[in-house]
Length: 99
Picture 1 (tube, rainbow, N blue to C red):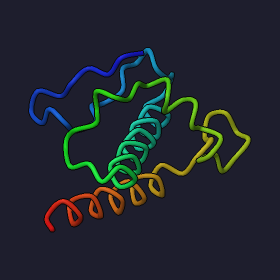
Picture 2 (picture 1 turned 45 degrees about the vertical axis):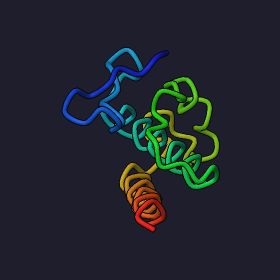
Picture 3 (picture 1 turned 90 degrees about the vertical axis):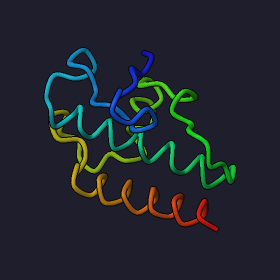
């Protein structure tokens, strides 16, 4: 599933559509996973350009087992922990690109 861009910030991971998951909790978690995947790739490739176009929602869904903390299908991960991880990785990207 392709990712629609957020017009306010063309490189910011947009909110996931309702088609992606039943609850906002799950959609927010998948958005955080997508942010993590993008930041990890930016750090690994030492790229300071927007990589959003290189990722799909399917990749975030496929990465779920890596981030899963529970067998409960309605709460498979801790969204706040995912947010913190995404924020930290994005800060590393900003720092690396500022050098």
